[in-house]
Length: 175
Length: 376
Image (tube, rainbow over all chains, first blue to last red; front, side):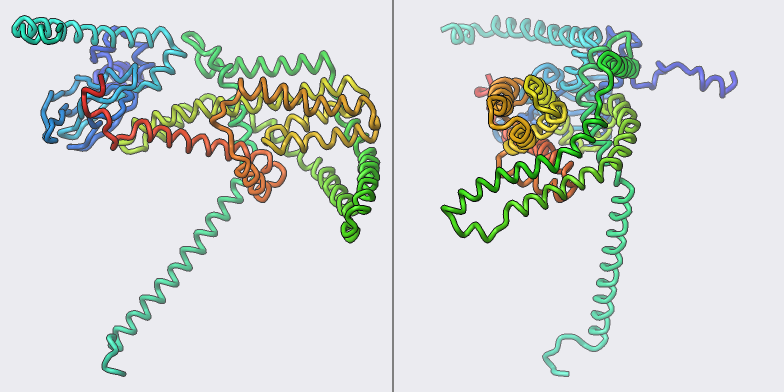
């Protein structure tokens, strides 16, 4: 095909577009192409250098991030102030999603380990979308609920397992 | 040369050359900077007012645009719908009521004004005569004559400026809809572009603060304009019940001056009371007009109904700041500056308050919640 025409008729959902990337994030998986095009206008693309802090433990969170390229380290501080690694997230992962609906202090800190491009979705934009485009916003919120419910389910199962292993803890908590 | 002198001759020469060069470049930078600011000022001279008014129009129309905007209707289309609605409604009102006879009213006012002034001064003089009996030293000051001169000069200035400002208003009718269209359509994109300039570490904070400030600002501006509109209409209607002339003009004056807190309502009251005193005398109608201005418009409507509903107490300014804003606004932009000075001061006040509140609540350095026990 003539490069001139192929340029004009190139689809917007080519694999390197932002909308395509957003469609691969689990929270936004149920959104169709038009919803993703709208989501593209809601998010903020932020470029980070290596070893840059995204947020600290105890910061008031205002939104979630998805990793487009790069790597992010999630860590806590123990009593002596040493870093305790919680997880290493790669491209396509997301973090901080709890802060999307309520402003709560972050439970862990996040830091980039290499040059990273993050896509942020923040509460103020989310609230605006709820007012203006309720159907898209409800799809996003349903996706968020699905992810959080899954996690809650898993942690409940794990807690039950732990309680079964250590009956003494159960006695302490009930007494 | 004394041995204690630390500098040798070449060093002194070098120092001299360096100092001269520093002073010369300083003067060059200063003069070029002042040229650039002068150029900027000339370039943006007539644009301040249209941009300000279009921003206000944007804040007023935004709720309507949001009402129409949705899944099916894009923002641009909804702006066009709102524009078309406003245009057709104002056309309908003009057709139904007919254009108000502004020209005749201004002509009549021009003829009547000296009469009002002289009658008011007569009244003032009789008051002064009483005062002079008790306080003889006042005699040295010719207060009445001063007021007459000042009033004449002001009125002439207003009349002279009218044709000029009519041209300016004509250009406003062209520029304001255009500017406010683009502000309505692109303000979100512009502000997102500006916020995205903040460093990564402070980005979330900047976004949150912007969200709070813009919400407060929109409410404040909308509230103030609506308040002025309602007060103006109520004063107009209240005055129309009496035989007073120029009720529409007096209503507009009351509405516009109501934008100034504390001082504005008193200034807005004076012309109405003077006209009432001269034309109608100290009768029942005068007291009714006084009641309309003070009791109905200011105390009942403004204090008990409008301000609690429309404007939050947070954005109230200290009286001293109000006076400072009026004086400074007057120095910069004359009468217009006096009117818009206070709202601009309130806007700055809102921004500072929001940032301070945010820093107090969400200070990243302040790790109150580091202890998990406290959190849950």
